[in-house]
Image 1 (cartoon, rainbow, N blue to C red):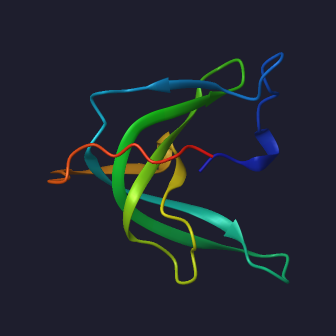
Image 2: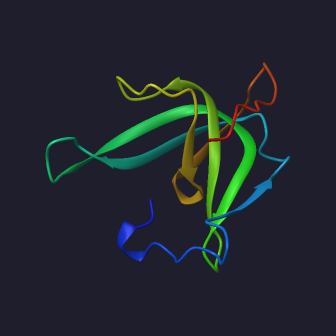
Length: 108
């Protein structure tokens, strides 16, 4: 995952540019990342597996791309959401295609 210390400045008038990559829609992927551990100054690793929707968001003047991973089949215990945004550099395509087809959940 990208360092939060080097997070790019938002684009003028918007925080991100939205897009869609049809080639990734319906592909199964693994995603790992970090998140602060509540009540501490530490962070821990989190792992997800799910289906890419094809939706992405680009942040900053250079593409810092995040993809929407839905229909989660693996997620951290207590993770309450059905989808998660993953940094493109943290995605690993498994080679599988979700037999249920593309997924388009609500984008938060």
